[in-house]
Length: 373
Image 1 (cartoon, rainbow, N blue to C red):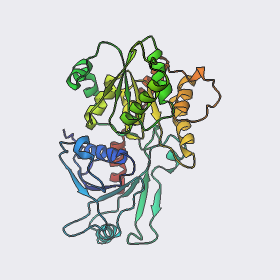
Image 2 (cartoon, rainbow, N blue to C red; image 1 turned 120 degrees about the horizontal axis):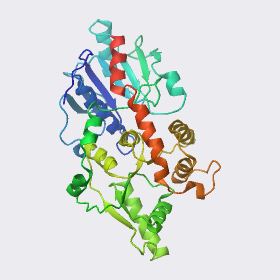
Image 3 (cartoon, rainbow, N blue to C red; image 1 turned 90 degrees about the horizontal axis):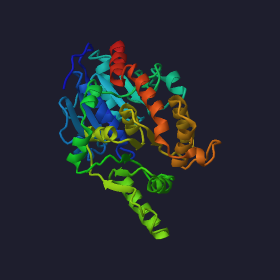
């Protein structure tokens, strides 16, 4: 559904390299659709587009998908007015050369954007919007600008569709679950989208011993493989670990992006990973736990703590995040890291309300580009 937009209609080239489990592609697809819904024309270049077959099987009006192979054959290709490289991927020299030629010939002004990774660290606000003059190569003399998504007013905001809140208000939890094949009888629903978290076995044991029945809704891929392996291991160690059947499992099919939102809205607690699903969990407004992508230099620990600080997470939620991610506890005892999602609801509700007061990422990006043009 296209919305009236006060911004000029431009042609965009968004470049994306698929690095880990299609999370980067998920962000770029959402961005492309969001921009197209506001009257922009978008060409999305990705080196692996296979995930779009299940992530977005219907495509989107105004979005053209191109497989990005190097070198790019520029025959019949005219770069658009906006060139956006997602997460520091390096655009091929021949495309930059053609884009630079159009700028120098006054065909259009330069709007070269480097969309950065999401972070709650202070540098995101300090670096957001900064220019970076290109000193060498085919783009020499042009200026690239850094655009930082973020959680505060000094950053580029988060991706959010104009109709998101209205769709959420209309959502019928029980009907969607039934359509999926889940017979829901009021048990706690826990969605699980993860890699292989250090705290997985502990979570399964906790849910199995809890007085409240829980159904684990497990996403396909690494999450399903990890859960099945952990369950098999627990059965070997103790065949009676889930004797009361307080914990049951439902292994999900591949979900498109809209249905992934529905999964988060339907669940009482959400376990998410990476960047795109973290943002969607925030919009869902339910208690959630984030598995951050590990980095060799342990920079992810700083990034995680910065986010938990912004979230004003209670001590139990901070401690659970550390255990879930296999990090040392910052002080609390094992008991402080207990799975107590009911006590985490307030900070999720407040974070969502705070974020809804800010302009979304696409609106901010369009405003930023309009000033450059």
